[in-house]
Length: 231
Image 1 (tube, rainbow, N blue to C red):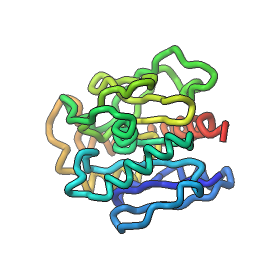
Image 2 (cartoon, one colour):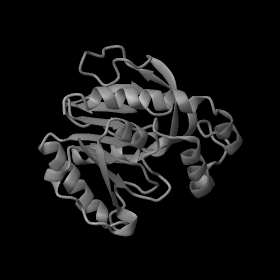
Image 3 (cartoon, helix red, strand yellow):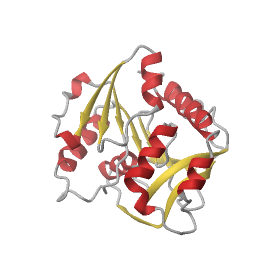
């Protein structure tokens, strides 16, 4: 399987996803938009993974490459490629499916619980995931649910946390791919957002939950295994 990443900033990388890719013998390639890389040929991609970033879906004037990225995502969805979006990536998918993306009432940054809805069938990538678990979050935007998608998970701060479209498109507003180094990079590069608020933890609180990494990475790998099984 040919996995391709869309990477928006140097400090948000695939994390533990790449461990899963390598362990399964899949190949991987990356478009790094911050280096102005060219887009791949869509026929060379089996599984598109869209990573996070601090910019907004609506920031085309600041980041003109967002226009061609959204066009590519739309075409990948149309061609029924497997498409996974994480944080900004989920927002880009929602936008590509015609939904509005906008600032949420609250930013959600840190380790907070997720509720997974119980109506998961055999094709749902969350079918083997606990109905409630703690995930890592770093987002300020949310989105309306696109037509035809099924909502999978929510949190207290953000109602639209995970969705699936058909059996080939999955959006995750939260991060299960992060390892300790990934979170440290986020703190170093986006620590100005760690201001006192209801759903924003301090850097010390975020760094304190070291036991969660193994759990969320295991969930990420289970989701990837289930989601990619039909490729």
